[in-house]
Image 1 (cartoon, helix red, strand yellow):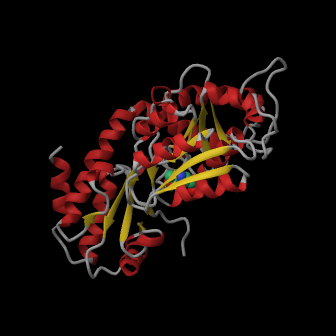
Image 2: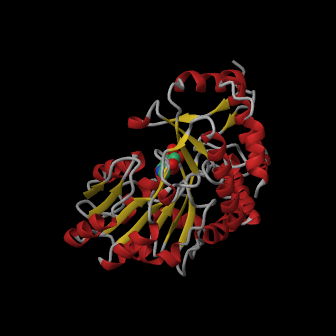
Image 3: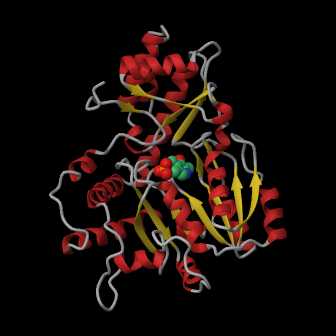
Length: 384
Ligand SMILES: *Cc1c(COP(=O)(O)O)cnc(C)c1O
């Protein structure tokens, strides 16, 4: 084993680290209460507002934990024990939401659809009107299946029943358009290692003015001290007596994530979305020539996680072992019901580079004895 040797991550998170983020990891250490660190954090906040397209009075910051902490913090802050939350689920991360909200003593109304299938809005609407939840929560892009859920259509339902609206933006924000203010999203979060291509360990989150208002009117304290938004605000925003220590933020991760967000905004989200779309097409077109098929119909396909059904006879575990062992390429298989049947190819952040997928095609050409693959892939890329 040589853990210092590079491995190409074509996984749906973590993703290859952006060079700017990597460089920032080695900046000289500073304290979490250092004025320059505060100034840097202020820039991150401004960039997060741009990234999420928040409206007036919103709050954005980084939580010290992965995307799952972002998920948990939303339920912990916006719900009190016994509050009703409608959770729409069609995969592993929707299921995680249900479990989290239940553990936090919310009254959960689960509206579930089979993994890999789209959400049926009429059933969600019916459940919302019947139950009048305080909040509706949904995963925008289900990483476990490669399905994209209808974020705007669900927003309309949340508005009809005057519920808060929470969206898991882990596979979308930073790579695809995300518009909190226009869509009426009250809480959104991601993880630093997904579309932003920073190291894992931070959850960039954003709350609308309405979400903050709801938090300020809580009858009970937030159940977890660590992810209490009021504690976070005391650190991120200067009060009358300046900023207050809440916990020791992982400063290097702040820098790396800050640089990664800046790199995404410099490139522009529109350019990144464009890169994901054509590259996804080229990958599918190429793999289809040797019997792979798209797992998700185009109408609800998530562009940042391309799920492909394996050709008959392809030994999933063996081929992925060869990719990892002989070619130093990491590819992710299915989860749960789709294990052994699909691969999930990441097109998030630095994943979504044609040169990386050319490496995959070259390796597959050798393993599957399909020497034409690299040229076919290059031709599909050139057509753009
Ligand atoms: C990865 C992921 C998460 C959880 O993030 P972690 O960083 O693994 O905690 C949540 N939701 C979705 C859709 C994800 O893809």
